[in-house]
Length: 419
Image (cartoon, rainbow, N blue to C red):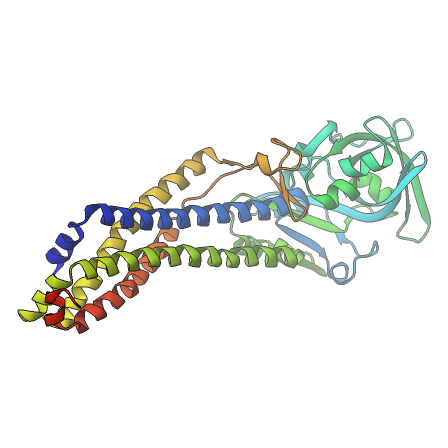
């Protein structure tokens, strides 16, 4: 039966090759698009964590429920070092958060003040690499009154205020004890992260300067951001960090901090099934058309087989087997094609610069989250199996219709060419 099925496929080699090619292109396209989608959405997740959040954050439990200046966590260097020593942790960034009115000459705007450790922060986020003018905060805060305090602004906020490196920035806020706090600072740098929240509304200060302005205790922070190495297991890292979390504090992953982003990623992954269904429908139409044409062209031959004693079940099985063989060859070629393309982009990356709002080299932004304009695919062997399996399933059902029709045909009318 197998030999006969293979011989039948070889009779019209052009049609067989065309069908195999169609199946191969479909399977290869599914593999490539699946790898692209995974790479794109993974880059989105990395952009969200590397640009501002970090992979995990620690806050006072009361701060999680309702953020306020009073709800802080003690962050001695010993705790930071213990957290940084956890496997796969790239760094721990203590932060002081608050809202302020920032202004220059006649312009002002409400902004978030982030007091950060100038050395530890770049180990968790990409903010230092996002400097587009001036420089990042100095490793050691300048001591007033001999030197003004330093500030780094988001590029969008700086444009609104009309400031640049070297200009004066006035910060007005309410301290933890309820009294007003203000100071004049020097803008030393501008950042462009691609994250709208950061670029349009964040001012980075030295942690000590922000704590002083907000009248916070020494060592008190509102947030500890934890960075993880690429590919690190988030749940495993959380389990390792959890025992080190101080009493009265809560550990959260980025997925808990931005559930809307997680939902967006899940919906994006789920919507790809619509594309896959369209591709499988096209594959099914091609296979069904090929098998129907083949059965019609060979109706005399099939009638003779029935006349000499071939059972309808055996005849139907042969036609189904032809469809499965056809799709199996196409699927294997498609796997080779899709794997080769994915491997190419895994090494060389896919340049998304054409889709960047600022042009090539400016980074790609989607839903307010920025990531590099070159994304690198990942070839996952497990992702190669489902397209092949589903193609074989589709081919089986595509072979059933002509198989059942041929098995039910009257051999007399089939041999005469009328059936």
